[in-house]
Amino acid sequence: MAALGSPLRTWRGLLRELRYLNAATGRPYRDTAAYRYLVKAFRAHRVTSEKLCRAQHELHFQAATYLCLLRSIREHVALHQEFHGKELPCKFTNDLHPLNPMDHSLSC
Image 1: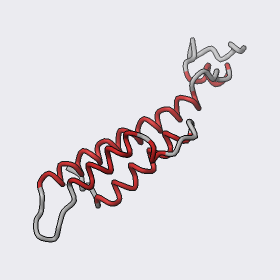
Image 2 (image 1 turned 135 degrees about the horizontal axis):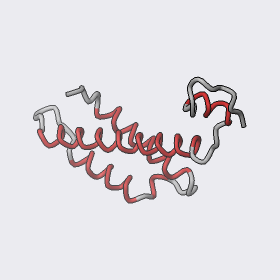
Image 3 (image 1 turned 180 degrees about the horizontal axis):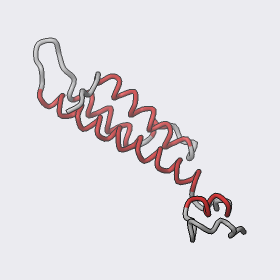
Image 4 (image 1 turned 30 degrees about the vertical axis):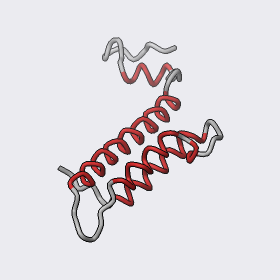
């Protein structure tokens, strides 16, 4: 299993992804239910100097998993917008999948 890193880094990553998600609406990310839930969960699972809480590690793992999901969705949408619906030049597609490898006389 890969190391999770620090909880603060995960927290900052989650806030960054919330800002990306709310950039389209123009609404501040702090006004969302997701932000309020994350703040409440992170505050409830803080570790004090006296004890090490297993629930805090579980929360960190779930937060890191959610961060990975949000990043993946954002990157997927960006790739989809960049490449969806674009037609490749005919010469390029003929080079990729020639109808007859010996006959290069076909052209568009």
